[in-house]
Image 1 (cartoon, rainbow, N blue to C red):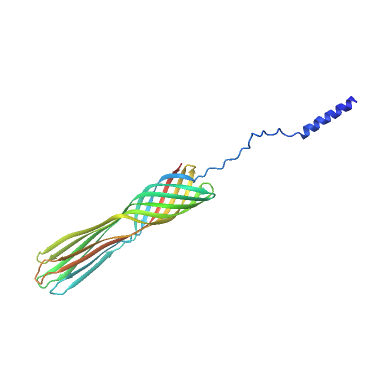
Image 2: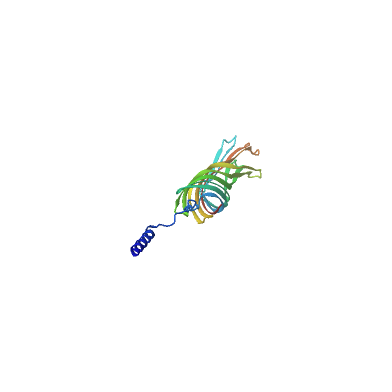
Length: 285
């Protein structure tokens, strides 16, 4: 009987061990939740950048001149222009902004400012020669020196991007732009006769002001580390057109056949439209 009782006791102990589970977890203990990875793009950033400008300034320097001899009734007209489409320049500056990331989409605002050395100098020179009879001859010469320049520009843009993995983002961007432009011209007029009668003078006009326009483009950001981002951006910038004009009207020295009236209208115009190619580095914090 004792052996039977011992046998049942041993079997009961084995069954208890077989069905026993792990010790229940205390109600105060919480399972750890994995922390989502920090976005490489979201947050404030600032940086430096540099690159090049390819401009189609489409500059034009022109002159219309007319001389009239009251007694002879002669008139001469002159029109001459110079045009050049391509100019290049370096540029460099600072930028700052903020990005919000929602899933794979990134929305941001960015401002920047940069200095440039974009400029073009041109010259137009020609003359009008009027016969004045057997003893008088008039020669009018006009020289126009023009200058077109962009000293600096600044943009404020929105950016809409899409991530390609954790480290790369492609984006489109657009917004407004302001820049300091200059268009100036100096007109030198000279009148001479065969026997030494000479008139010479110089006239100038300079339009230097801050202009507004628009810009648009695209680019790519690449995260080197969670706090360092390389960026490459293309922008098209349109600041409109600007011109400078001088009008000259005078009466020449008296000669054998009376006086001559000289009218000159000189003008310099430039379209400030250009392409920008930038590379930079941003520091996110």
